[in-house]
Image (cartoon, rainbow, N blue to C red):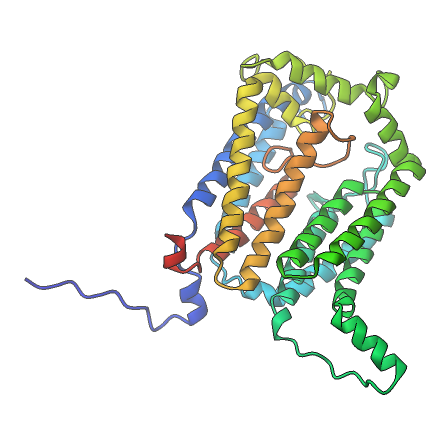
Length: 406
């Protein structure tokens, strides 16, 4: 009996190509696709009425059709990105970060959104309308991961101990202050540009993602305590002294103080959640989406979810999000190298807090901010970027050693 020949690596392929052809993590992929499909169904249900009554769009399936097209394109992007050796993202990181900063500058004079949501956050390039902040998030994750992955390889600088400046710089180097300067500068530049839009929630998300990567890289805990105190103080000042945020804070504390104005959306969201009860009114049977709840297919789509599928259905969706997040962190722990691990930590932390912030806003736990629910909220370019980020995670998962992935 002739024994089959053992499989050997294809010698015509480069090492990079062989590494990128390993099996992707199926649990993470399946959870992503399930959430995407459920999100598309909810966009169809939540947007049907608003599209039907909008004479400009011409079809009750307008939002769903566009989201479906972008969803299919996003899955293709996910697959293509997952086939790239993630080490290539090291070289791309500074380009993505630089491009995002340029776009954040351009959105200030040329952006849109000020007349509708009170914040200038969107840029339009041909048929595409997008938020540069979405690209900035990815730029920060890629750049911080690339820089910090080589943190342990850096040699200490030989400061001149004979001079006062040399001793001072040596002390700052030992406590890690000098190391943090480039990361702090990047975060400050992006935060200032985003606050000028203004985009408070997006700024917080980027700061959290940057802090998560720094923490995972082993930066001293004392810097997080000090930095967190400074950021918290700045946020308190912004929320109490800036009219845009202080007004939202007042309405959040008592939405019925302006029930037909700024508090209307929050009140209608709570009515939608409450009317859903335990089992919901049934898929497609929401009442609040009939021009009562503003943005039912966008930032407040989760309120329609609660109304139609009830507490149990909403909890199942939250569990799916939680499983995806847990699986992501598991992949980070088992990544082939530090760069891959930090990439996943940054992406999954961004994803996790975006889910938390959106659901917190919809349920009244947090003040109303313009932040979408991943895979569920209407927005084609944002969906493609989210799926591309999931593709990066899957690219890292392809190179996890078999002994760890078992």
